[in-house]
Structure formats: C-alpha cells, structure tokens
Image 1: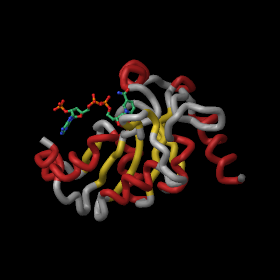
Image 2 (image 1 turned 90 degrees about the vertical axis):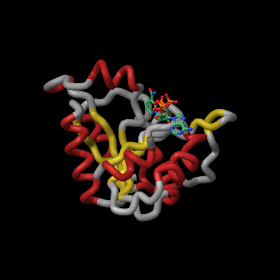
Image 3 (image 1 turned 60 degrees about the horizontal axis):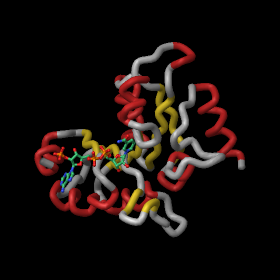
Image 4 (image 1 turned 135 degrees about the horizontal axis):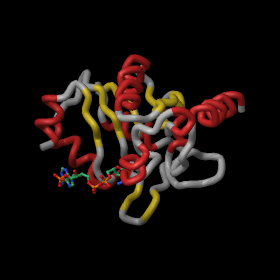
Length: 160
Ligand SMILES: NC(=O)c1ccc[n+]([C@@H]2O[C@H](COP(=O)([O-])OP(=O)(O)OC[C@H]3O[C@@H](n4cnc5c(N)ncnc54)[C@H](OP(=O)(O)O)[C@@H]3O)[C@@H](O)[C@H]2O)c1
C-alpha cells in the first residue's frame, strides 16, 4: 500500500498512472524528508497533457512539498529496462535523472548504477523537458543513449 511504502522506505518510487498521482500521494501521506523517484509520464485521459510551459517534474515536485524529489526511469519502457539492465562497457545504457536536491540525486544516481545503468543528470526539475514525453527530435525521451552521447547531449543543452 502507498502508506506502507512511504513510511518504510528512505527512498520511495512513484510509479503510477499520471491520472492517479494526486490520489496515490494522498494515500501515501506526508513524504517529508523521503527521497522520491518519480517515474511517471504525463499521459492523461485525453493523451499527452499540455503542461502550460512547466515540466512534469516541476508539477510533480510541487505536489509533494517536503519530499526530496527526483525523476528517473521514465524515458525507457519497462520491458527495455528489464532487457538492457546490466550491460557493460560501451553498451551500458544511460538512465537520465533530474531534481533540485543534489544529495538526493547522488543517492538516486547510485541506485541507477546498482540497477545496471549509467546515471546522467539532466539538471534541475526546470531542465527536465528533454527527458519528458512525447518522443521527438531534440529530446532523449524514448531513446537508448550511451554515456558519451548522453553527456554531449546534456552539455549541448546547457550551452544553448
Ligand atoms: N510501463 C512502462 O514501460 C513505463 C516506462 C516508463 C515510465 N512509465 C510511467 O510510469 C508510471 C507507471 O507505469 P506502469 O506501466 O507501471 O503503470 P501501471 O501498470 O498502470 O500501474 C503501476 C502501479 O499503479 C498501482 N495502482 C493502480 N491503481 C492504484 C490506486 N488506485 N491506488 C494505488 N496504486 C494504484 C498498481 O498497484 P497494484 O499492482 O497494487 O494494483 C501498480 O503497481 C506511469 O506514469 C508511466 O507513464 C511507464
């Protein structure tokens, strides 16, 4: 149950449909001090949601004030993640993450590494658009990237 997970875990993963987030956060109760990994994508009842210029990460971080919000594991399908986890060398797949709490991001980067991917930080929640749906040119959502090209992508994003 969401409340058990929120009370038990130092790190809590939010992995539910976009349309259920408010309900599930209400079930979970306060997440103050908890590191949250948000895996969600903004697919609503009518398709991809228009977020009005904010990122989905900014919207969700604001829904859980007090939580140490991060976003990761959202850019690749679960089936692909299961199949690609643990690759080595140049084949190791990148998992992007973002968040405004640097220490929380360090913890989550470690978990991403443990899960078998190379963590690459996109930046803060305001920088998350490129790792958010839909799949499109100039974004990394839905793309398999490896470390060098992922780091080049982020460096290019920061320079523009
Ligand atoms: N699937 C993917 O490939 C993928 C990849 C990247 C990101 N995402 C994103 O990750 C999120 C989760 O995706 P998913 O495919 O895992 O979704 P999902 O199969 O619809 O459901 C995930 C979880 O939601 C829980 N849930 C459903 N209704 C609930 C309720 N009323 N209260 C509390 N929990 C409830 C389910 O718990 P029970 O098992 O206990 O019913 C289930 O564990 C989505 O936002 C999606 O866009 C998905």
